[in-house]
Length: 111
Image 1 (tube, rainbow, N blue to C red):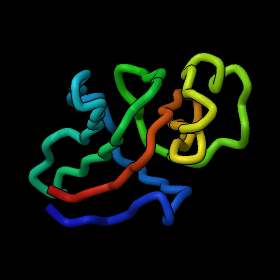
Image 2 (cartoon, one colour):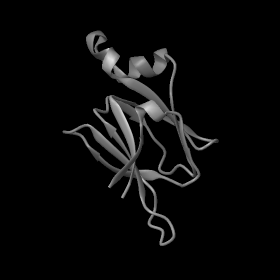
Image 3 (cartoon, rainbow, N blue to C red):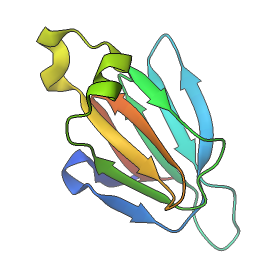
Image 4 (tube, helix red, strand yellow):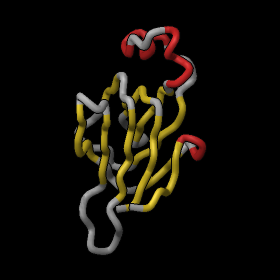
């Protein structure tokens, strides 16, 4: 596994299609992954300490950017005031559809 990017590298943009791969409720760990391709390595986006999310079944391409304050998402995530500084709201988009993840860390890795 090779780290390609993290929070400091946002916004991220890739033309590869991603889908939700796994989510662990107990560890609050979400993984989006590309499909297997003999010509390209599998890419994986890992979100840690997930407080809230809204995802599609697939994103035809993927753009991840930091959201400015969004009261609707903040209210939905219900993160306690004292913990808000360690969370980031990230917008996910394929140019047509949008979603979000509220988490404390994100990284793009090559498997």
